[in-house]
Figure 1 (cartoon, rainbow, N blue to C red):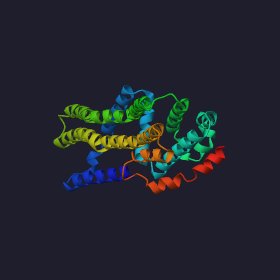
Figure 2 (figure 1 turned 90 degrees about the vertical axis):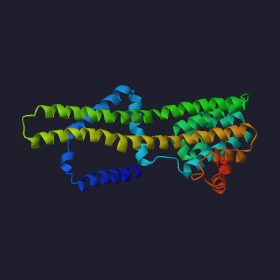
Figure 3 (figure 1 turned 45 degrees about the horizontal axis):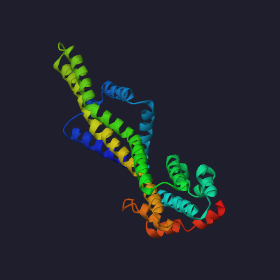
Figure 4 (figure 1 turned 180 degrees about the horizontal axis):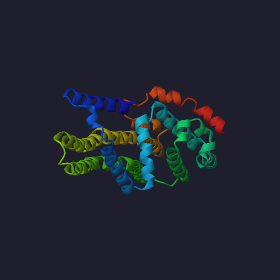
Length: 291
């Protein structure tokens, strides 16, 4: 919704200001200039990126428009599933805990936290490191280094869509000039026409420059920044898991360990201690069901 409101405000101010200066909107309606610019931009986007990144960019744009960032419930359920697993690690045998992490889709613990269960990448991340903890001979600083490396890899993969959009945005002004040059070439072929016709052709050519710059700085650039913001916030869930499990490996009780994870959440989004405690009150019931 924020993106749509921003685009409406931007278009309203630009077009409204143009009309207030005495301009006529129909002059800006140059569909073939738009075809040249947008078509060339999309073509270069396909050339520069593998198909996986192309598909992920479409997904990232949808995420940006939907503002698909973690909500308080996502944070609470992430902390909740970690709390339940850490209690299992403390009180149950290796085989009993492995039953949860080897098949999380059928685990009563994961089923109690549906937002985590739907996030397959996060669920796999949690299960992988719980499995390493079960082995029992891994040192916390070694696990921390491994986690940092994997989180950086995940971030790098998620940011490919952002970098692809930035590259498109950077190229749009130049593609606008390409469209403008083609328009000028067309105008040069009409030098024998009246000044009114020639002026219209030159004006149409300059619309290409306007479109390229406008699309770059008022549309593609801001959407790319939104993609980065959304995906950075989603990456925060992995940091929560990292800090929580490391605290547990260093001897913290489950209720204390999840506080380490809670503190990594931005202050204006961080659930209260009471909310976290309330969300973990049913842990015992979940464990009984799992048993």
